[in-house]
Amino acid sequence: MFCPKCGKENNDESNYCFDCGFNLHSESKEPESKNYPTPEGKIFSGWASLIIMLLLGRVHNQYAIAFEIATLIISIYLMNSKNQTGKVNGIILIIVWGIWEMIGLMSRLSMANN
Image: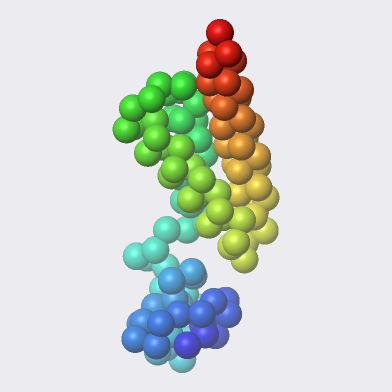
Protein backbone atom coordinates (compact mmCIF):
# COMPACT_ATOMS: atom_id res chain seq x y z
CA MET A 1 0.00 0.00 0.00
CA PHE A 2 1.33 3.42 -0.95
CA CYS A 3 0.75 6.43 1.30
CA PRO A 4 -1.54 8.97 -0.40
CA LYS A 5 0.25 11.78 1.45
CA CYS A 6 3.95 11.11 0.74
CA GLY A 7 3.94 8.16 -1.68
CA LYS A 8 6.07 5.90 0.54
CA GLU A 9 5.35 2.17 0.27
CA ASN A 10 3.98 0.58 3.45
CA ASN A 11 2.90 -2.91 4.49
CA ASP A 12 -0.71 -3.71 3.63
CA GLU A 13 -1.41 -4.32 7.34
CA SER A 14 -0.09 -0.88 8.37
CA ASN A 15 -2.47 1.66 9.84
CA TYR A 16 0.01 4.55 9.63
CA CYS A 17 2.68 5.51 7.10
CA PHE A 18 6.16 4.61 8.30
CA ASP A 19 7.60 7.78 6.73
CA CYS A 20 5.16 10.62 7.44
CA GLY A 21 2.76 9.17 10.02
CA PHE A 22 -0.34 9.61 7.84
CA ASN A 23 -3.35 7.50 8.85
CA LEU A 24 -3.63 5.20 5.84
CA HIS A 25 -7.32 4.56 6.55
CA SER A 26 -8.26 8.23 6.91
CA GLU A 27 -10.07 10.40 4.40
CA SER A 28 -8.04 13.47 5.44
CA LYS A 29 -4.66 14.40 3.94
CA GLU A 30 -3.32 15.59 7.31
CA PRO A 31 -0.71 13.31 8.92
CA GLU A 32 -1.24 12.11 12.45
CA SER A 33 2.34 12.72 13.48
CA LYS A 34 1.83 12.87 17.24
CA ASN A 35 3.36 9.41 17.65
CA TYR A 36 6.11 9.83 15.04
CA PRO A 37 9.30 11.88 15.11
CA THR A 38 9.27 15.04 13.04
CA PRO A 39 11.92 15.58 10.36
CA GLU A 40 13.51 18.06 12.75
CA GLY A 41 13.69 15.36 15.41
CA LYS A 42 15.41 12.96 13.02
CA ILE A 43 17.88 15.66 11.97
CA PHE A 44 18.57 16.52 15.61
CA SER A 45 19.13 12.83 16.38
CA GLY A 46 21.65 12.55 13.55
CA TRP A 47 23.63 15.59 14.66
CA ALA A 48 23.52 14.56 18.32
CA SER A 49 24.79 11.10 17.40
CA LEU A 50 27.59 12.60 15.29
CA ILE A 51 28.67 15.00 18.04
CA ILE A 52 28.76 12.23 20.63
CA MET A 53 30.71 10.05 18.19
CA LEU A 54 33.28 12.82 17.73
CA LEU A 55 33.50 13.50 21.49
CA LEU A 56 34.16 9.84 22.22
CA GLY A 57 37.13 10.05 19.87
CA ARG A 58 38.81 6.94 18.63
CA VAL A 59 37.92 5.00 21.77
CA HIS A 60 37.25 1.39 20.88
CA ASN A 61 34.36 0.43 23.10
CA GLN A 62 30.75 -0.51 22.56
CA TYR A 63 29.50 3.06 23.09
CA ALA A 64 31.73 4.58 20.41
CA ILE A 65 30.84 1.84 17.95
CA ALA A 66 27.13 2.22 18.72
CA PHE A 67 27.22 5.97 17.99
CA GLU A 68 29.20 5.42 14.78
CA ILE A 69 26.61 2.93 13.57
CA ALA A 70 23.72 5.15 14.69
CA THR A 71 25.19 8.12 12.82
CA LEU A 72 25.55 6.05 9.67
CA ILE A 73 22.00 4.68 9.84
CA ILE A 74 20.41 8.06 10.56
CA SER A 75 22.47 9.67 7.76
CA ILE A 76 21.32 7.10 5.21
CA TYR A 77 17.72 7.43 6.41
CA LEU A 78 17.82 11.22 6.08
CA MET A 79 19.43 11.05 2.63
CA ASN A 80 16.50 8.92 1.45
CA SER A 81 13.78 11.12 2.97
CA LYS A 82 11.46 13.26 0.88
CA ASN A 83 12.26 16.30 3.02
CA GLN A 84 14.91 18.46 1.28
CA THR A 85 16.33 19.71 4.58
CA GLY A 86 16.63 16.12 5.76
CA LYS A 87 18.45 15.14 2.55
CA VAL A 88 20.97 17.96 2.88
CA ASN A 89 21.63 17.19 6.54
CA GLY A 90 21.93 13.47 5.74
CA ILE A 91 24.55 14.20 3.07
CA ILE A 92 26.54 16.45 5.40
CA LEU A 93 26.37 13.86 8.20
CA ILE A 94 27.54 11.03 5.93
CA ILE A 95 30.44 13.13 4.62
CA VAL A 96 31.63 13.99 8.14
CA TRP A 97 31.14 10.35 9.19
CA GLY A 98 33.20 9.17 6.20
CA ILE A 99 36.02 11.62 6.91
CA TRP A 100 36.06 10.49 10.55
CA GLU A 101 36.27 6.85 9.52
CA MET A 102 39.07 7.59 7.04
CA ILE A 103 41.06 9.38 9.75
CA GLY A 104 40.63 6.33 11.99
CA LEU A 105 41.73 4.00 9.21
CA MET A 106 44.82 6.08 8.43
CA SER A 107 45.79 6.24 12.11
CA ARG A 108 45.46 2.44 12.44
CA LEU A 109 47.56 1.94 9.31
CA SER A 110 50.27 4.30 10.54
CA MET A 111 50.39 2.48 13.90
CA ALA A 112 50.70 -0.85 12.10
CA ASN A 113 53.67 0.43 10.11
CA ASN A 114 55.56 1.56 13.24
